[in-house]
Length: 519
Image (cartoon, rainbow, N blue to C red):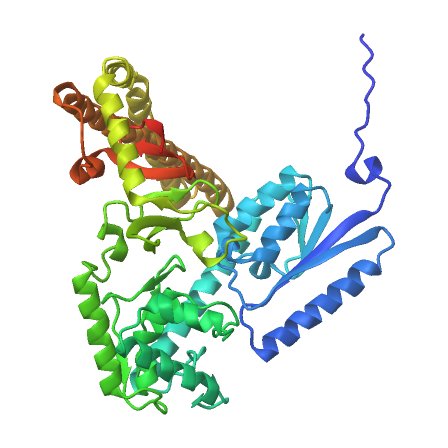
């Protein structure tokens, strides 16, 4: 008989005799005094708790103040902790409860899985759950679902309460606009800021633009509401804020079921309350400014809510800086003999130390486009015909076959879940096994749907690029050399322009080609 010798595996503790580097995470959902006191208590508790263990080494305390737990993207401290875990700075994490860690089941499971891949367990004190020793994710999924349900319930209760306060006019504004302060009971005027508000409205009525006003405020070192720099967007927002007349409109924004905030364009009821607080601007001045801003928009072809400046000029919104990625803005430059149109990086305009990319002339950019098109017309047999043939020969049969296969698997998955439900209803399997198997099937179905979406988008993209390439080839085969810039042709062929330097740009065409051109 063969002799087999068992070689015992080493546990995590046996492999590593050194102390565990333990970090703690805590969070409060509002920035009220009571919540911040709770946060300080949590911080003190974890510092003492971790330091008291001889086998633990304090690896840091990560905390988020006044943020919701429904989305991990909105919690910088949590994301920093995960980044430090990837960097090998943490071995173990402690947190108060699942609801403090995440109130979104998907985020909770995703983060726990990522940390376990790094061999970093999470311990939830309230639930007494260590992810490093649990045999299945089922219990964690159930507890996370309960936490998410609790968050949804709290959110709905808060929405109902806020709606009632909207309706009876007792809602208290959480963040007064520039020019006002909150004294604990109501909004009161801040005299120094109110003086600036009146000056801004006066300047607009005198004919000045919002960017000019912002520049003057910045040059005079007058801080904005948050102590930063003024922008034209900030000024425009103030000019449209009815609160300066003493009135208030409630529910200008709303939150959907996925906890995303949107501007209320009529999807929800709004509530107007007159004489809510002391006014800084008269209603007549406010209406005059609103009418003036609207008239300027009409004159410049700007339609509110429809992209604003994007359709104003053919290059608007399509020129990107190759250094910082910001868009270019149209400006009028003046030299000693004449004026000319130029396009400048918005970041460079605001702060030259953040981007060194200088302006490019409008006529140089148009000339570069004409040159690029003429090259395509001259060399379409060498460039466009091979490119169109390559797009046509791109084999889509495999993708289509895979989509059909995935759709069949989805139907099979739905049948399996239906059978599973019947088995549980008839008492052949218990609730725990049903939940475990059903969660696995749901996860599998979601993977199928994701792959179908990716393949469909890929096919759709290939088709649109082929159509655009064929249109461009048809034009190039019949066209003569351009001798002037054609705005319609530019709109039909170019997605955007990437400025590489003051002397070189790259035209990203709708057919998928990117062509560089010197100026």
